[in-house]
Amino acid sequence: MVKYPREEISYKKLYRKLDLNKNLGIAWPELPEDREIAIIDEDQATQSVAEIFTPDEFDEEFCVQNSIKIQDFEEIFKKLDQNFISWIFKSLDRIKIKKPDKPCDICGKYQYMDERTPIICQGCYITVHESCYGVAESASKRWLCKKCIFHYEKAVCKFCNTSNGIFKKTVTNEWGHVVCSLLIPGVSFCNMNVKDPIDDTEAERLEGICSVCGNCSTFLIKCAYGGCDVFYHSSCAAQKLYCDIGNGVSYCEKHNPLNRSKRIMSRRNTLKDVESYPELSNALLIRETRGFSEPRRTRYSKVVAKAPKAIETGLEKYSGTPALDLISKYWKHKRQLAGYYFDDLFMFPNYFLKNPQE
Image 1 (tube, rainbow, N blue to C red):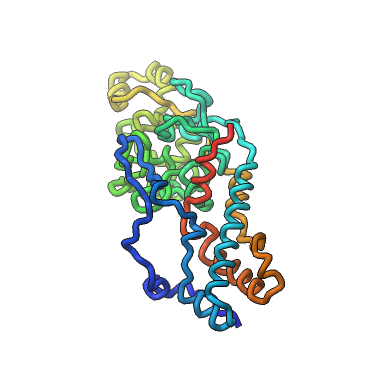
Image 2 (image 1 turned 90 degrees about the vertical axis):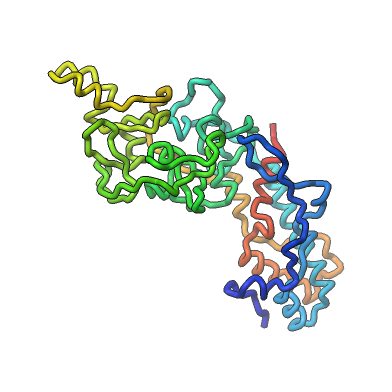
């Protein structure tokens, strides 16, 4: 009977031979403030993930129980890793790049004032402008948003509790919309140039019932008109109300500044009405009233979600042996349990992004 790994065991017991001080070949070069990308130092990191695989205690016990030589196990296991990774890489190479076909999910516009060409995430097909999302360098046609880089399909905004739209990570390792972060008082970005990560440690909590959707929430925002006590979700405001994301303010339907001239004409105390609007410090960036984009299943998302597949190419000398069959089943189970990204969570997105297809 095959004994499979148990998830609850401490990594110190599971990987007794793990050297925490080993040089992994990761370099942190001096970068300007608008860059926050770690790169692999190719002079030091010359081995692939499959090549640096080392059997752990479970693997050794598996070999003892099934009378398999540890050398044979290591050779077969590494080859199965290499074959599967190569198969995924080839599938990524064949992906046909989709062009932007929707308005920016953040400003809601097809064209922004700087007329930058919008970019589309190949992992969820959500379109944004580079400046709106905080893309520091001009993105290639192969671009992925943060959620897709982290392979996190079930992200939910901690502020509005919705799953549509494009996300950024928070400093508390949660997810949030860029629009929500711009509208909720106390929320900011650690790096404004790349709008990442979201700093929600001082987020203002306003609990109550949203006047738009009728649901309760702990992160409502308030109409910016002085004295108005209308509350709503930032996502509801983005969909149906006036939102100036350039200044982080929004207004209920009654105090929509676009209807202001009509309202002033019908009021006697026009001075009070004017003074009730906050003074703005930035240029207006009024978001088009539309909901957040729904993420779609893409060719990329399907490829990286493929379950581990035991490809026995290059293992012909073990063909027909019980060892190959046992190790293939063990490899598949272990990779499904540990995750098909192996020791490198970003292996597949990094490969996809480093191999632009023009």
